[in-house]
Image (cartoon, rainbow, N blue to C red; front, top):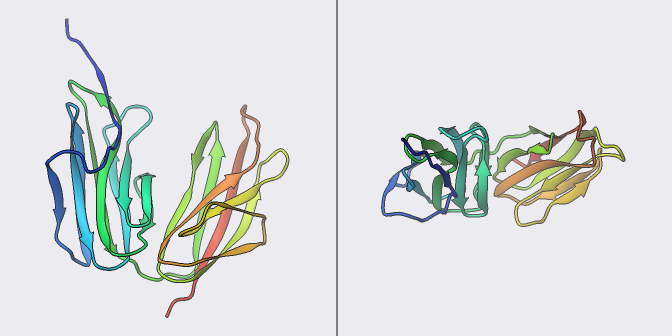
Length: 212
């Protein structure tokens, strides 16, 4: 009889003796993996504020796989295609977060690390449905204005939940703005109550940086 055990990669960063990465450069690619309960982290060193983009996250079960990133000003998981900005120079560590079969499964993830470029304006969207949330993320390199442009779906109203570098999440009604001091990451979520049977929340914001 073949026994199957589900292994959960908890994305414990800085674990294990194996590292994959590259030396300090304008653009770097790092990879990480998990197999048979062992993890291989990806690391990069940056000399300036950087943008970290999850380019691949695969192999997980029904809940999927995420890129778990630890970097200056950021610690958390992001989906493939999402990007975060670091608050300064330093080390970027990538790990995989997800569940897989211990005997035959594995997790693989990769990320691109490059210098943060000032882009303005940037549009963000976020949503919440079936107790699952999707946040909007964007890196910034300078001072920015973040404006809540849309928030809908809540039974008693909906607002934007905006987090800027160095601050806790702020509740921002539609049409209002807050200031973000970069470098770092702007995160958008939705605040409100919705019907679990078919209801949802949606919100949007624009991020306008003071680019040189």
